[in-house]
Length: 230
Image (cartoon, rainbow, N blue to C red):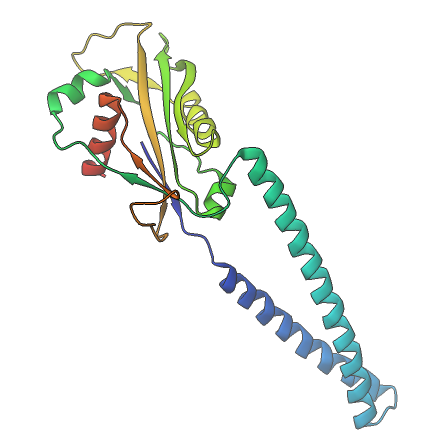
């Protein structure tokens, strides 16, 4: 299963919007204070000076508060990154599909169809950091079509991708494929590949990229089929 996340607003765009809104607010505040001081009997030059000093003090206080808020959020994000064992910078998954995929083997690999869309949430912090990942979950299908005995086969670069895959499987419903005999108690494996749409992909080398070459033939075929049909 391919899990896509849309590219978020960049830091520069966010700062431009914040500074633009602050500029408009400061101009309106300056005009309002100047008009109020003139109504109190102050002349034009003195009212402009007093309102300008008040606006300058307000801007300094606001910038100080925003800087403290930014540092607090950065510290919280770093603590959460360490707790979730995520890397500090962007990384990507480089998929290398097998040369040939047999459709007949695809049919036998998973005798169940998912009822409705299978949705998995992209981990929020990983999306913000630009971190892509992969998880392969093993599970059984109960008589009522729900996944049970879910456990992790492989997860990279953090277990939070497996947690997202496990949550998706817990909410999924399965039904047997047409004219296929299913055996209850059998274990199946499903890959979840987390990608960020529109993000710059790193080169196919270095410690920040992983070549996804699963030894599980069924997982490789499933992901290749999703790539061709999606």
